[in-house]
Length: 179
Ligand code: FES
Ligand code: FES
Image 1 (cartoon, rainbow, N blue to C red):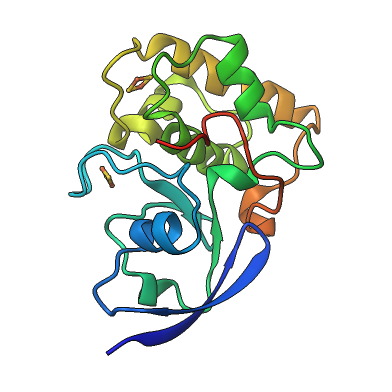
Image 2 (cartoon, helix red, strand yellow; image 1 turned 120 degrees about the vertical axis):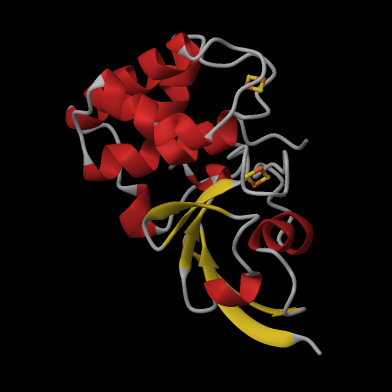
């Protein structure tokens, strides 16, 4: 039997009916058409499905949609605001932090989770934060450089907090294309 949930996703409230077994990632992709959140493994190992849940990055294949009832969810589609990319998106572009881009939405959401609680992380802290996010085609060096660069830009005041806002923003963000 389906259950009713209300979830605020990227600043917009959704009232939905879901099966109790529906995963948050499936809900986002199939019911809300937010396909920027990717499914790589479906078993909590790759991090491609990482989203913000009440200000914390989580692997959305490990969370049931019903567990997000009443919560604020931020996805990659909500990173850009007012037609302007979030600094983490600009930084991945400028530092060549991606190749195929499949891992990129999850990488960026995990990175934002770090940068909103630690505005000036060391490379070791960046690597520790991203250890649950796997990339099959870049070296991790440029990803770390991108997160460091985004940290500088965010310290300079170039972004609204995603955690606080539930990632309110425009669709079509970098790395948020359909897959
Ligand atoms: Fe969720 Fe891989 S799809 S961790
Ligand atoms: Fe291809 Fe990371 S850029 S998996």
